[in-house]
Image 1 (cartoon, rainbow, N blue to C red):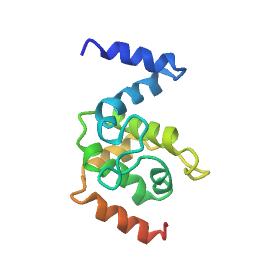
Image 2: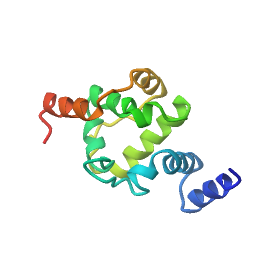
Image 3: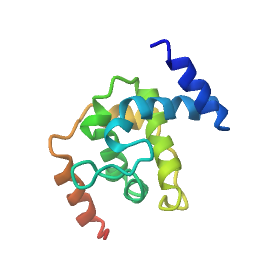
Length: 135
């Protein structure tokens, strides 16, 4: 764990705010191993975090979905830390697909959603896609 301050410093040296650097660090530690550092994942086994999450964020059930995915809901992060990571993923990897009126996820909505972890995230994602006629 002695390397964590060096990682945080490296993230901030890239021009990010301290909060963004911390969120990126948590992403790399808890999500990047499977979704890869650039968020592209290894579809279909590991979904990409580029593009689709921004489209999902346009809908209340899509916003909840992002915090209910088992890897997110069960990550060893506080509600505030998870909220920061999810918002970082949305702005870092999905800026071009976020709705124009996008509001960042709040700690309260993430805390509420993550208590209801998904058993089958792929099925729920398909259902959201169908409900909102997303292609």
